[in-house]
Length: 307
Ligand SMILES: C[S@@+](CC[C@H](N)C(=O)[O-])C[C@H]1O[C@@H](n2cnc3c(N)ncnc32)[C@H](O)[C@@H]1O
Image (cartoon, rainbow, N blue to C red; front, side, top):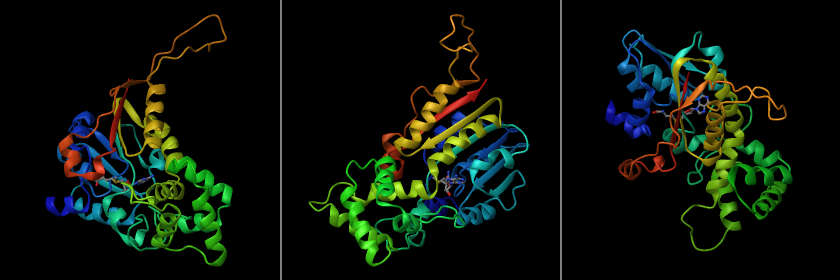
């Protein structure tokens, strides 16, 4: 089972996350992005009378988790978006984890449309019932909306040439395949092959928009922290700078004392912070992990604890 699982998806920062989560045998835990169960399995192994709720919005992950935990009554599997965590858990919990983004299996499955190097439909929905696909965005957003999207979520400084090519192309026929879009982007960025494929950042931006990843994360952080017991920990692994910035700023804000009167009033009354920042600097993978798992390169683990 171990070899099979690592072929599907190698969990990132596994030992570091499990150590920081401080799993209690009788505790209650939620894995918001259970995927193929790499982190969940380690948590479940440490439970005696405790319980783990595994959430994922991807049907393939859910089918896998249902098989993995079939005979384990300490684990419940829920297909949902973790933005609904407050409705999924019925009582406060000892620990919540998020390992954000897509799984290797999703990324490597051409039919999901996440990869710019495999022919597939321009889809990119993590939840196959989601209302908007990448093709909907590419074919229906205005020129200005596309420019804004690639700047904001792809960090592309000058996306105009690519966007103009998309707009011209779709006047003749809609863009429907990953390779069609990847080639169009490459044609706008000629020259020697750079270290990164030029389509990478455009695909990243589309994926974030299709799945509303940053909005979902922002709202879920508030809900997840409300779901923690005193002493409970929230551990989050991010893979790109935009989501890491959201987590970093939220954790910083939550663990600061605040002047309850505000800075315009001469009196001051400081509030006690509700959270303790466990990681002043993020935990990052070792050289060895990075060598063994390319996907781990950009991973950052941040943790806070409710006081
Ligand atoms: C990086 S993988 C997690 C891998 C997992 N930790 C493991 O060890 O197998 C991320 C997973 O989170 C899921 N996911 C991402 N955003 C989600 C959301 N908002 N709600 C529910 N699941 C989400 C994806 O479907 C994917 O399966």
